[in-house]
Image (cartoon, rainbow, N blue to C red; front, side):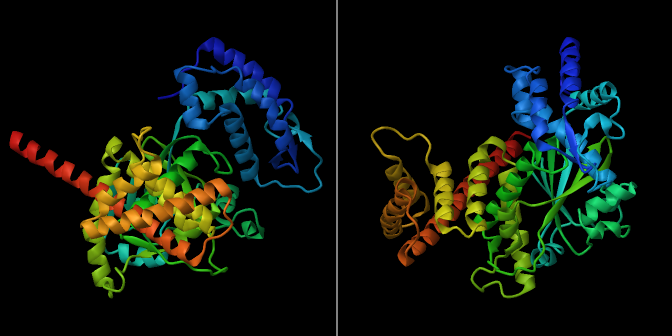
Length: 444
């Protein structure tokens, strides 16, 4: 549903936008001078500062929707023109070709702004080792409303998600980036038929440089999916230290009606990229010693992940905790990873604390009784968790500088506990679904 701005508000916004754009400067005929963007804040202040529309704009574009949108659209236009000139002096925006009439430019951008939100599909390619196994298992599998695993078999996928726009300069920029390779172009750009892709649907706005509420939301879902798969032992992280592996990136397609057009390509955040590249299919400590066994395991376990993303509010804590769990596998900072895993566990188990029971004791007891299947297991979890929480407190409250060998062992136990709690929570979701299906069958 497009933004609903009253006509009087549009008029005020047009005046403010026209005035602000007259103060925007452009460097080298291609890049907005970032210091001049603050003038757009005056236009943002014309928008409602409270109420439903304000909340919607905040959710779609962040705290400064006009700044985000105007910066994104002008930057994208200048970047895709590919007219960089190192000798060009800094120009005011109205001195740049196409922006001579700022009143018309402001009107055009305003009409685009009120047509938001726009719909996007972000496409991530799985690492080869996962793709080679998934390829025989999935053709197209949906995980809730926003996530799809898909293989680009046949021509329909490439037809609906073209990698070329027909704009030569735009295509060069998308497929080669801002390097000398952009001179070569990529007329042969195509999807990898041997890969499996994860696609995420996002609504909002995505500008030239990709750092937006929409991309943040999509990356969070990517982390959640990977975190859930790690917890369910579908994937595991096998850390590599290769400096030669290129960064992973995702394609952005804008959806209009029944068509999608390639919009841009962005690299993943460095930390997410590192964790994503290190994913492999779990081998259950060597038990899955062939591709056939691993593919059978994928067929058996992927439906469990589907349940998580198809359960709506019931699974919100699992989805959020899985993002933090995945983060704990991404970086190389062991202290941060320790805290991230503890946050994941607190999300899962830390609600409804009271003054009589401290958070640490609450987490300790809930964790032990949820994942401990015998008195002995519960006793072990209770003992280990007390040590784990002590280390967590030292990191958070005293600025602990490193982990000892024993504390690293505790960290791996903490990640194990988090994975086990997620497994138990998913089991509860499965039981709820089975009960719902039984009632539905009984009523039919």
